[in-house]
Length: 240
Image (tube, rainbow, N blue to C red; front, side, top):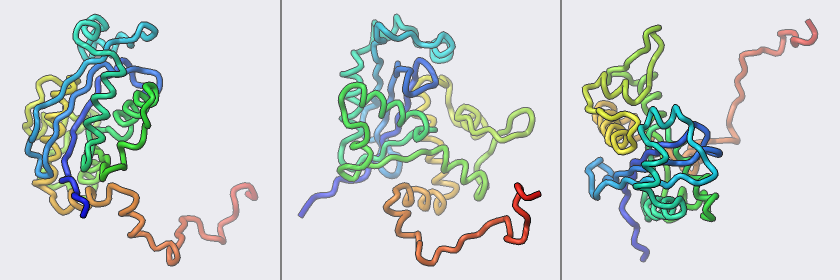
């Protein structure tokens, strides 16, 4: 009988030299592994990647993160070793790798860096009961449908803010070094705990439906009905 590895969360975050995951390079990576109840079970991981000779980070990125090219050269490892260590953590059986806006940004950084260094960019996302998830989308859903229990900050014009530093400040969560990868990881864990505490049913629903295999079971394609806001008797726009 095969032994199933227990589920663990790998909360992670990158700081990069720009906003394009395909062209810009990672400068810093941090991660913390927890159990399914968000108890930290291993020592935090924090790595710097030495900047490549053919890449210059955006000056604004250096100002925001405080990470200069000189710092990466002094404290970092080469990118191949950097991503190899990250891949080893993310590919551990039973790992759910997650972050804050990780699906749209951090996972793309991971994929591109893996590919650039001759790793399979996708295997760690599904093999050996591994998966990925993103806390920001769960918070978007909670704000729209189950807002009770969480303070939702807004910008000066009244529009909603889901910036991690705004959410942590509004909810009394310590986050003294925003845009430091390890500080952002701790803040993300705290927001995940808060969401699970205040809206446990929504949290469990979203988590259980994080994979397409689970979602496919909920789809009855044969009996699916199409709904449209345009009835047939409205003239087509090109006929007007």
